[in-house]
Image 1 (cartoon, rainbow over the protein chains, first blue to last red):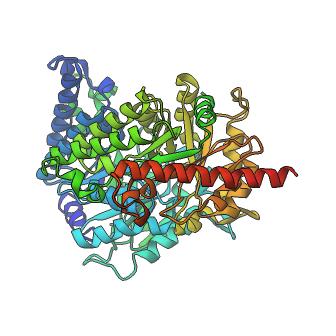
Image 2 (image 1 turned 180 degrees about the horizontal axis):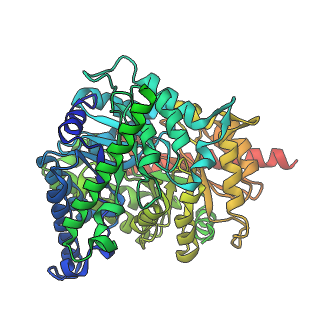
Length: 299
Length: 299
């Protein structure tokens, strides 16, 4: 609750990195695929086993994993079994589990979505789309309170087109600032022992200036930062996501970590070892950048 | 493609109403439930059989059904089997099938969502959330072109809180107008024999003034209008959604139709007969309002 569980894991591991399990069968190494049949069941077992290998390789390094549900939904019902089984395995291995579902709908439907994901035992947090309005967040907020969960609401996303709606100017302010401010307000009155509310925001690593601005507006909200690595975000970009307490953000990398085996410097390693080495390097790079930045601002 | 298939069904049936299969087990009549076991499998078979009864009762009246995916997702993988089986049954019974999924994500993920729903044989259209930007629509638009499908993008939704973001003022315009204009522009160059592009919009029946404005901006885009009936929208509200050709909109009612058996005037009827009578009455009411309105504007 109130991100206290996540914060404990971040502190214990001295790491604010998240591994994104956006697992695409095409990108799984051939020498691992060959252990499984190529029919649909075989493909799904292969994806699940790939995820488990990655989780085992990074579970003592990172505090959390993020599952992009689309990559499982695409296989229909059996894909959803793999999604929930991956969540269960990660959670039972001590990881904080984020279901990246980006749902959002009118109240009566949002409640059903909350039941479908947020209330699930092995899921700690979900991502939510705010376009339909802040009343659509209420069922999720209620469940955060009731079940000790958290949500990350889209504020400024990592893609190029995020400017189209999120950067529109509303009475001198950017729309993402309006959303950020309201999310901060909605979390008022709810705070855990580390001072954070259970409403977080999603802000892309690809927009460091916006990130810095949103950090100040959402000062007691956690931020989930996608867009690191494959999408172009660097440690120097994401350092602005952190508060003076060294907390307040988790940085996600998906393709950059789980397919690290494709990189020249990991050649010859098993894929999970490449992922482990890559996430250790990401952790150290991010920690150095954040440490340097916080020393500078505190001087 | 280009809504020509939907338009043919609308013309043949002289009906622009859509039945929303937001099927909630709690609301299924007890005397139907008792035919099925109450374990999870029994509940799911009951939902599927309920949907099939409704589809059979309305298939000669309405051109389309809309499936709210949340009500199936909540049952995990087995629920998704019922979702796709309901879509298949509706499609094979000559209905246009809208998957109300409201997905939206960065390009690489949107492509996977498109594969998960829009490319499916028995699904004609999906709903999409535009908050992340217009580049996130591209994979869906490509698939519309390639597979002869359509999308309905959220513009102004039916809930109270839709004002929070959608009604923000951007350079003198409401945000929903900015979205509407861009959706119209994105559809330029694509038009079927009835003059419509394959990009549609979602506008709530609960906002007739906004609906009227959006109709003028999105003049060659189809509109999907939720919020009729249970949410408060009336035929007098939705008439503004129609073009002078009598086309351009479909009006969805979910709870008002599928649980019509609960209403006093349908007492004693089997639930599917109540739904059939209710949707016939909705069709006539909407047709009268639209006819009156179009005669008035054309005078």
